[in-house]
Amino acid sequence: MTVRLTDQDGIGSFERIVTSTTVSELNGDTRFVEEVDAKNGALLTRTETIVNDNGLITEVRDDANGDLSADIVSLSTTTLNADGSTTVDVEVWDVTGGGSVVRSSETTTTSDNARSISTLSDVYGDDVDDMSMLRIVGDDGWVAITETEFDTNGTKLSQFITETS
Image (cartoon, rainbow, N blue to C red; front, side, top):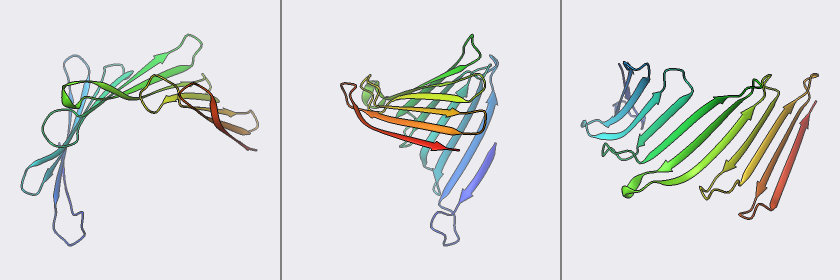
């Protein structure tokens, strides 16, 4: 366990107590918990991160208002593909108010040699890819990055291409 006292306003007294704890679970998962308390001991925020035993799945539960109930939950799942590439899928949910609403999602695929990275992002949680990014690195160090923004119908709104040699 680690405890940090923070002086946010710089006047020489602490206003926040940050406690970080790491626990290895019996099933092999690792649980990280960070709590931020006010000087009077009231819980302000709490973040719990659970990483599964092989490190391929991570769940983060954020309690933004200190009521011991998660407000935002994100799940990151890494897939090791047969061709040596990896695909990471991240979904973020708003779980306040008794329901669960997808806020955003993102899929990133990285080639086996990490010279090609492509990302598709659903920024608004409406199950439509709003942005894409493709980054390619050549043998000589040349880098090309293409960023594209789409509307809700999938029509290209804008595109930026950056090349560096």
